[in-house]
Length: 126
Length: 110
Image (cartoon, rainbow over all chains, first blue to last red):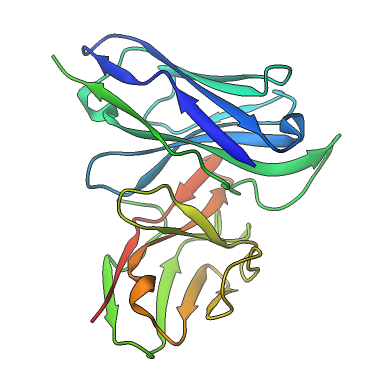
């Protein structure tokens, strides 16, 4: 299984950016998908998770109302639309595969994260 | 301040056994299983232990996990220089309705 992020870059405060993550080597539609970020020199911070069938989405309080996670199982991709960006959103953003599901039955912890993409840098600065 | 509490740093000498703790609450570790991640500088994290004590294929059996109540631990026996990395614990939090990740522990092999 491999994940490849794209779409990062430099943006001014208040701006928007859309991250993409494409999966390969596994049945994408069977897995929850998540975004996790890491500010420079800091630890990991969970950002958002979307269920395999897009039936529910979960967000960290720090991004709720500003970020939106979505997915396209045909394109085997998950997205993170980021709006009203702030300097504190500057980080390396990782895409991670989540728990596996078959129909309504899911396995493992909802906090399963792995494997991970290589990360994409988002810099918010004026 | 992370919901899951880990010691910021730990150290050990080659061959030693070290244990990294992860303290949570009834809404996260008390309800859900714990996963552990290993991250080397400049690289993406890697799933090291899942479901409290299960090792993915390829992870040496020197690494072991356990959980009791609202706390979990990652033990590394026969410490090696290549184990020097950051280690993170994570679980789902039913109250926050999201994943929570510990602040991370930087392990130094002296």
